[in-house]
Image 1 (cartoon, helix red, strand yellow):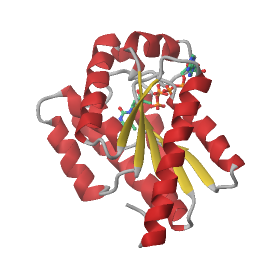
Image 2 (cartoon, protein in one colour; image 1 turned 90 degrees about the vertical axis):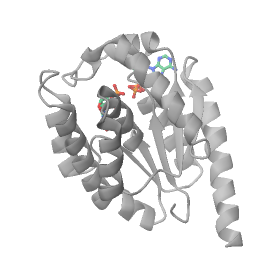
Image 3 (cartoon, protein in one colour; image 1 turned 180 degrees about the vertical axis):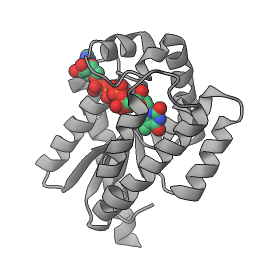
Length: 217
Ligand code: ADP
Ligand code: TYD
C-alpha cells in the first residue's frame, strides 16, 4: 500500500459505467484541490496504449488466453513503471479504469488453469494492488446494451456476449467477497449521479482513514 492510499481502480463488466464514474470522481477530487491522474487499462502509457490496439482490435481468436495474459501484463507493467508509480510517488491520486482484477476475470475465467497463471505472473511482474477498488455491479444485459450502443473498433471482447459477461459478473462479486477490505460493490443500475454519490462517499471515507493512518504512523 502506498502512504497516501491514493491508488483507486474501477472494475466491472463492459458498459457498467466505469469510465463515466472514473471521470466524475476525478472531477470531484480535482474540485477539492487534489492532484489527480486519471488513467485506464489496457493503456495509460505510450507503450501500453500500443499494446491496447493489439489486444482489443481484430477477430476474437486473434490471441490465445495465455498470450492475452502476457500482453495485458506487459501493458500493466509499462503503465505501472511510467505512469502509476511516478504519480503516486509525487503524492497524486491515481484513478485507474480497470486494473489487475480485469485480467483475473477476463483471462483467468476462460480455462481451468488460467487464473493460477494470471496470479503467478501478477506476483512476478506487478506485485501491486490498488488501495481501493470500486466494483460497479449490474445485470450484464443492461451493461451489454449500453456498451453495444457505443460505436468503435475495440470489439474483440464485446463480441463475447451475455453468457461470458454473466460469468464475469459472478467472478467479480466473488473477488469482492474474498477481498472485502479493498473491493467495494456499488449498484450501477441507477442514474450516473446516484452512482457517483456513492462513489464519492466511499472514496471520501477511504481518503480520510488513510490520512488518519499516516498522521498516526
Ligand atoms: P464502461 O467504461 O464500464 O464500459 P461507460 O462509462 O463507457 O462504461 O458507459 C457505457 C455507456 O453507458 C456510455 O454510453 C455511457 O454514457 C452510458 N452510461 C454510463 N453510466 C450510465 C448510467 N448510470 N445510466 C445510463 N447510462 C450510462
Ligand atoms: P475497456 O476499454 O475498459 O472496455 P469497456 O469500456 O467496454 O469496459 O476495456 C476493454 C476490454 O478489455 C474489456 O472488454 C475488458 C478487456 N480487458 C481484459 O480482457 N483484460 C484486462 O486485463 C483488461 C485491463 C481489460
